[in-house]
Each structure stands twice: as C-alpha cells, then as structure tokens.
Length: 128
Image 1 (cartoon, one colour):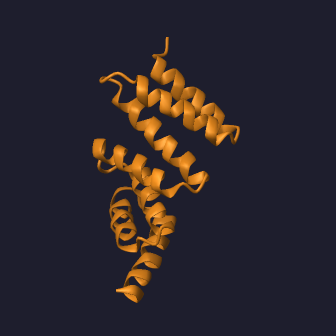
Image 2 (cartoon, one colour):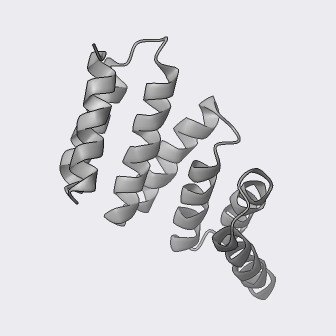
Image 3 (cartoon, helix red, strand yellow):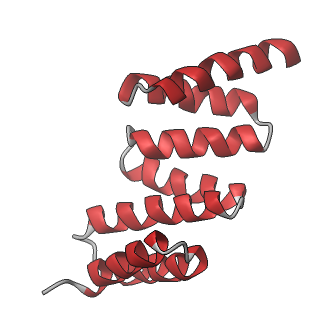
C-alpha cells in the first residue's frame, strides 16, 4: 500500500492532469507535510510538481521557493533548474535566471534551455 505522502502526491498528479492546479497544490502540500524522513523522493516530487502548479498560476516567487527546496536536496535537478530559471526571468532577475539555465544546460540540455541561455545572455549584456 502507498504511504500517506505517496497517496497525496498521486492525488495531486491526478488533479494536475485535470487542470485543477489549486487542488493539486493542496495535495502536494499535504504530501510534503506528511512525508517521513525516508521519503525524500516523494518530498522532492511534491515540491517539484507544486512548483509547476505555481508556474501555471504565475506565482513566480513560490515557484522559486519550491524549486530552491528541491535544489537544496538535489542540486542537479534539471526540471527545477529550468523552472526556477524561467521564474527568475519572469521576475526580470536575468543574472539569476542565466545561472540556473547554464547549469540546466549541463544537466538537461534541451532546445528550450539553449534558447533561454541565448535570450538571457542578451538580456544580461543589454542591462549590465
């Protein structure tokens, strides 16, 4: 049987798939709260998925907070580097966004990341 944290994560995933981001946030939050110390992967998934929900609702400060929690536990988590980088960019924190995207390029290279690095490099150069 699933642990309470894993069950909450699964409920969050189901709500997310149905486009119910606020309900998903509640389930992921529950998963984070009830996760036991040995459920690191569940906790990481809940924070990571909740960050995605916050991005969908344009709550970029919370995206950054949740992605940072994941990166404290798993510094090379590609998806969270990308999510946090895009959130920093949305808040016009281009240097921080570029740092995350450059690391994401090493960990999880994709065309989206390459485009972001190019765009952010240009923004940083134009501003500073």
